Length: 157
Image 1 (cartoon, rainbow, N blue to C red):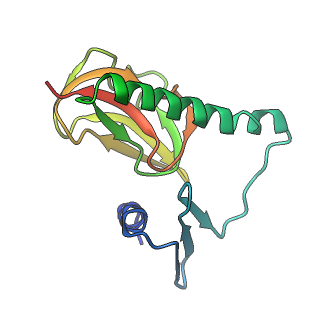
Image 2: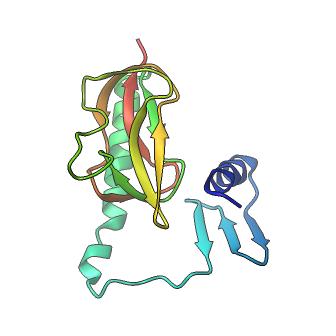
Image 3: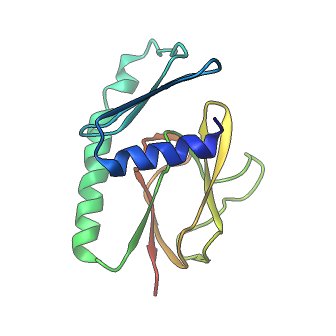
């Protein structure tokens, strides 16, 4: 199963209303559970940082982003939110020595690469699904993102 197929499966499961899906083959095992926030659980061991302080702010950051999203939605209903299709690390540029893909105020068209999200050592280009102007970048460079987390606000006019 390739990365695109996994992304499509995650989207399908989140929209279908199913609570849990498990798929096992000889090469991999994947379990997708939905609830208040969809999660992808895989069988590889996870490395936990010895710094619990870094993990503690995760909930407030998500809450503040949700509050920002709600406030923005109330202010400008015509803005389109571009969301992360996968869990991973958000990067605004293709490599450290290259310029950012987009900046606030840039005009974009459908299919333009806006950022990359690294997931399991794979760099996935996130393309625009609409044309318009970047109004706000909601995530800082090199920060973790969740599935379906808002990344950009675009004014389609």
